Length: 103
Image 1: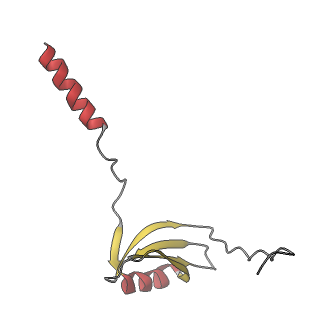
Image 2 (image 1 turned 30 degrees about the vertical axis):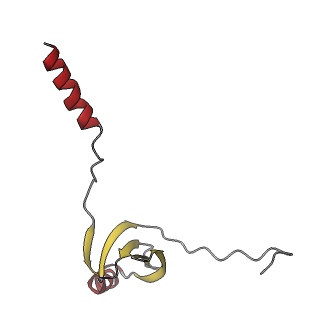
Image 3 (image 1 turned 90 degrees about the vertical axis):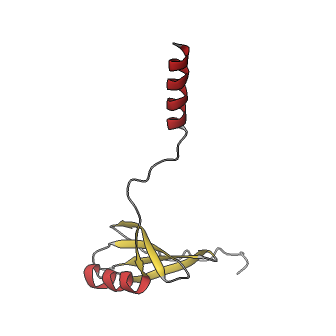
């Protein structure tokens, strides 16, 4: 009796400590192909980019007409993966410098 209870407790405990499952896999392809597809299918062009670390470049493709956007992460080997997509992309104007602040 105790062996069954202990076994059940161990199995349920192990299941609860597992890593979370991703809802969907990342869509990855060569960067040039993804960029061309984003431009032809959605009218999105490169709007911004920045280094996350030496091996990951974050890029934002957006369309001014439709407001759609796609965020890619690109690796040095030329592969890119789609991190996120959405709508209603807005570009905020830069804030004016404060008086007396160092420039």
